[in-house]
Figure 1: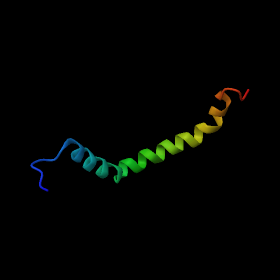
Figure 2 (figure 1 turned 90 degrees about the vertical axis):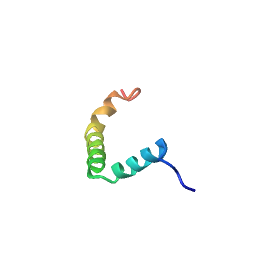
Figure 3 (figure 1 turned 180 degrees about the horizontal axis):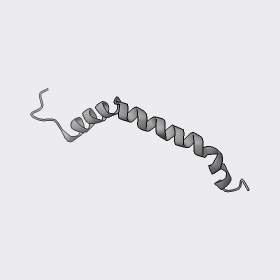
Length: 51
């Protein structure tokens, strides 16, 4: 089956595949995990019912 042009979904999915395999995506995910790991002990104090 031949397409005359790429659909929006096809263009978006191609972009998503390229981005998620990039170094920028890896660094972003690593920074999110790092911030979560560092802030975890401090956020426990703010949890309702923990005080």
